[in-house]
Length: 402
View (cartoon, rainbow, N blue to C red):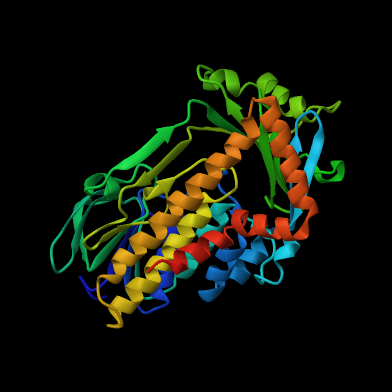
């Protein structure tokens, strides 16, 4: 392999492997470094929106992802006491996208699938158990400092893409802030084998309540009917030991959908949730993508998708510069496009989603739910609403920025 004439990618999560794979398809050598020994399998993001599927189709990944996932063609707003308020049919987008549905597939399956394809390239140098410790750069390239299995090492490349998550070492060394806030409450995520679909629940549901909202969505797991993940907000001060007791966990799920038998809970996890965006996604030859650039609450299933959008946008621009089809200033366009839509769409929509579910003012709650009904019942209003919530409007906005 050539030495410095390659792109360095920090982090082999779903965004990092997408960056690596998309570059290798353009015959650009890649060194991909990952701190852990094995990619994590904890339940995290699992929603792939229509424009994400379109982007993945451009690099040959939509079909293998589809083969692992399940199509979710409708989603619902519900009230914890009143039941279903509105149901939205993504089929209304069939004239806009070839993927008029949400595809649900656990992100760790996606990452592992692409990592295998990535490592099949002769120009891929994949190193796990290799945490990043820092970097330096000059006019000619980047030197990435890592702590490999055999000790400290420096890896050289032309560019570096930091996909190393919300605690990104790359971002912390860049001259950029990471403004935003951390929610007081944490999110409890439970996975159950119980199938809610025969009870009228869609594969994605957002359930409003002023005291304890929740959201739920179905994932493939090991096969039909899959598992259902249910998310609840946890009040500050509750300990993990208290929250993870069988009694407490059962009380949460039974609280919104009572049944005579206990739920089989196959996984439980607790997350601290943030809303933050880096001040810039670029410093010279170093870039940020995914959670290293922006983190948000999971309501709406947008964070993973935004990271993949970052990856596709950036790798297309790196490819043009690599082949001499564009100058380095095209990378400033990456920052303008991706950071603008992170502010206007990613953070705006996810914050609004949370606000709508937890609203305590009864008059506002009633009006919001009435608006959900009116929108769902009017095909044109519903289509316009879905263009935004399915992330198509945000992609169009990014493409309009020059």
